[in-house]
Image 1 (cartoon, rainbow, N blue to C red):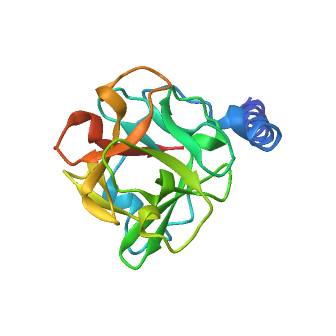
Image 2: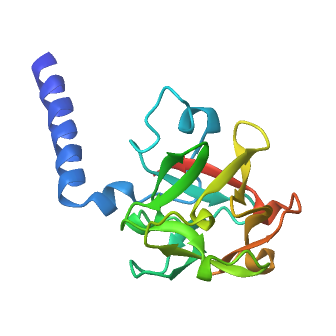
Length: 188
């Protein structure tokens, strides 16, 4: 009997591993109720920031940042959790700032035209030395934070019109400690 239980457990583990290998998107398909990952665990100096992708969830809508496509200057929006590689972000330390590199393509979260004007769309862009691609993760507590743009730290990433709808655009606005400007990391 014990051998049957062990075989069943091994079979389940192998099946799960094959599912990940065959369909990584299906393996990451999650619901919008993913558990948050503490900021201290994600940004720990002891961990390699680039090692594990995370998802970035808006507190108000519980939706995730996702680029529209892999194209340069693709707009970033909030979407329901889907496990799409475009919802994954790799955090890269850049001289004390954080660059969010999209997991689906080697492009960074930045602002359209590198602008710091209020209501400028968030986009994914080719990596460069432009400060609009760097962010300050400004912790509220160990779960929630604001993303302040390095080029103008009075500007925070938020969701247009404080919308909770899937497809609403992410953009920068004057930091207002608003719930639509509040984010958390989750497992990807």
